[in-house]
Image (cartoon, rainbow, N blue to C red; front, side, top):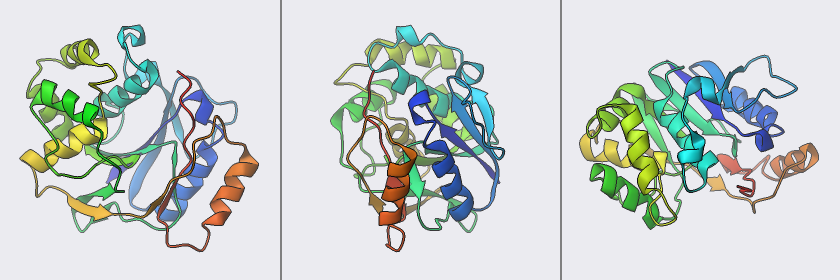
Length: 241
């Protein structure tokens, strides 16, 4: 059993109904769906439990030097204690278009989408944890099934507290040394628990990023792939911070 977490900023609120519909149509076996967000949307979806970011993790965003909102969201995903031990993080920039298995039998799956390798992510993980690109491919795919016990094992392998981890992380993050929660966790698992997960490639269509998406644009974009063999679509927004 696992929970689902959608991490969203206010710019993403128009996307959430589409993300939610794609989950309930194509994903099975989960317990609850949560949305971590900086404020409550005007229109809430009945099947989602909304939790304010600072309730999940209280930390000073102003101490994050580089792209603070995005880095803070990554801390949320790694350090949250709201969900069950197993929790599937689904960024608000992804839609499932076909049924996707999160487990193969009793084993959780890494859903791999063939993203390119970005060196700053590994500069970060090497400096903090001695973990490089162990797998050889990218774990970034806007979707990740985490196990909190393994996340804690990772963090506490080098730091006495989560607060100490955040402080050290904030001190080294810049444009050349940057946290990717998916690369960090995926390569840690591959290095120290290689048999814990299955590794499964999914087909992803990536769109040009837009400043914002209207409901009509989202509907039209989704309809383009209605009868395709694509498993997931990205609906990314331009970063404005």
